[in-house]
Length: 571
Image 1 (cartoon, rainbow, N blue to C red):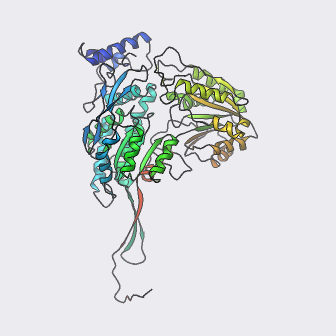
Image 2 (image 1 turned 120 degrees about the horizontal axis):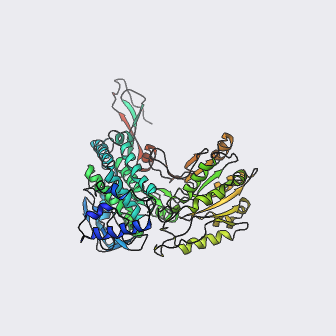
Image 3 (image 1 turned 45 degrees about the horizontal axis):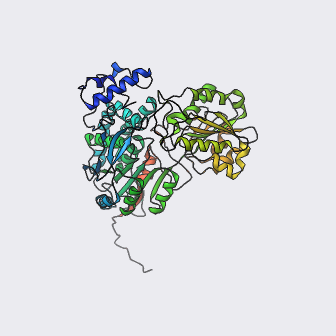
């Protein structure tokens, strides 16, 4: 991994080119490792995967000798900043991109842009309705563009370079993003603004409910889904008539920059969305000084609470995700349940807000050997195919410290894992550990201090397995409802009464129920978001888009006529 894991199609570049140098080193490394699971065969990609014409980076070629260059988008113009920041390769520490680093002193034009958007938005049902059609057409064209193999490959590979994950995981994001664009093609954008009418008290009177935008808004999203989350939320905001300033974790923001370039190619006006590369505190100041009318934040709970205070509650949140799964008393489809539980806990090294953080194992599943099977699945994960990889927000030292704290809980034991990865060049700032599970008896969670430690979210390949048995479901439900976050959950059972008892007495916003229940991999056709909080935001569906990005307005038309015998009465 000297520069990148490239493909043989790059060998056709001139021998002296930086792209050729980077790619050749990568191809040799790939051949010597014997890895074939991560990429298509070299001959397969030679003719097919050219870099799209609208793209400004090459995910296979970016490395220290040929770093990619990112740009801000402000008022329709691609710009830089006085300072730049390095983006390092999470697998070897090499600088692979240079991006702008906007400082507070440079925020003036950004603040002015955010404040200048009318409160009535760029469009609404009564103003510039032509834009609904325009956006639907742009989505149709963009979805066609994303169907091209070279575009699908481009985004998948760029995601994999910025946030190392298996090819299956990386490939999922552009697929969901394409399907989202297909879903909101043609008339579907205008259908989001569907209004309703209620008959009035007399002829000529009608009450009409319409969906109105907020105006100048913000989107702030994390590193773990560098395409899907910012693309879907940014476009959702635009659909409803808002002008958006988007910031993604700067380590991965190249991905949404390239998406916006593709959307411009498909017909999205360049002035609909501003894109800023900056640190979190700078974005915080921009949102406050720009008086952002609504901000969608996906990320840590601490930052979410700060934004809520600073923006006077004008936020929608998808913050944190200590997510649970309960294995009920009925054991069936053992192999599938074990596989799914491994996927939920350790895919993308557990760096999903929907990752399975706590698994409640009924004694019947324990007797069937579910923990042993999970250990077997976890042992097959490796760096060669990136089914385990670098943890971008927790260092190895910090992960191991948390594991040791969990192991000090009375009755705790190490189920599997618990060691740092070996034989890699992942930078020390990142984590590199085996898929790990610590096992606890449910009785231990009664202690508030223990509960706090056991339910601390570790954004990495770590889960807590809690043993429970018949008669202890009230303890399980108490634990589930004592957690601070209620994003996703899984209830694995086909016992209808058990399912109703658990689902009916919990509040997680996206809950999967049945023997095939999971916590991760939400597709584009259903709501994904937390519940139990008036600030809860969502993604994917029309309900999520309207909830987050528009507000209700009632317009009462009253044209008359006024009756000839009408007489007013003073009151």
